[in-house]
Length: 296
Image (cartoon, rainbow, N blue to C red):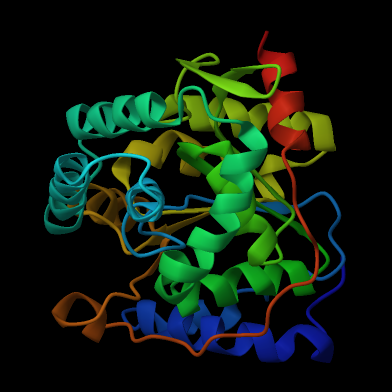
């Protein structure tokens, strides 16, 4: 297989520097590691969690802020969203009860609205609340895979419509997310199947890899949460990004690669790489639809 060439070197430079810092205890091992991602490996791809991995905070909360601004719901409902977001940021973990509350709130809010309307609004909300919260370091990692000719997917419990907008705006291949039921293009307030969370993410990645003809041992996955250990364990190149305490411990035990782009004490040991340019490949919901059909 081909090693990395000059065309991808700039995008990978900051990641390689972080890798050396993360392996200070064994610098000779880090120096001997082959370059990654591997240029031209069409059997490899990358799978990125969204909340607190690619984006600071929860995408669903930022989307809720945008809908509140557009009078979709009242201020007391926004306060509930804000409390859930505060818990997420302070605890640094995905609490199932809070996630369920946020999901139920979102479903009740969009019920009766057209899918096309929410997709259009999602584009505006991305510019208003999400673009500035993308972690530059994680974005650089995703772009390194794109520059190597690999596909890059978001895999998230957030609604697939939100995830698709974010993937397209970041130049990624596409997105897998939780699917809200719609009839004749109008949301019913129910889900199709289960939320894409925990083991369901691993199932989604496995199904997508089979459909795409990928070799999971050559793929990479990135997440901040111990809930995504099943997905991370599927691939040959797991990364803990801004990890919660449980994932950090698990990653160190298994010698997984670790990146921390948060400011303050937790990030001081690793540092933050500069952002790279925007990728050029647009994504869509086709993969989510194909996955749903496969799981049925």
